[in-house]
Image (cartoon, rainbow, N blue to C red; front, side, top):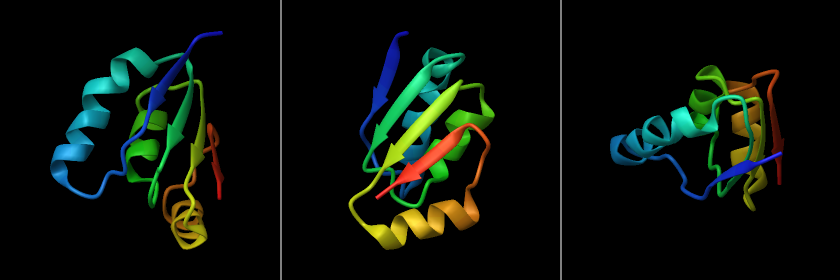
Length: 79
């Protein structure tokens, strides 16, 4: 299937607004998020109907925080 690709780390309102803007295009799709940070934007996409999200970040502490704070059945966080 088709994938939507998001490559921003949501750490302020402007970046979260970008996730909100992209959410309609991610509904019912598999999504790959690079540099997901602590997962706030990923969680928002999942709640707004993304089918599946693979979320990547090179910082293992960000991934641990994302798994603890923004867990969702349609999301897999990877370091």
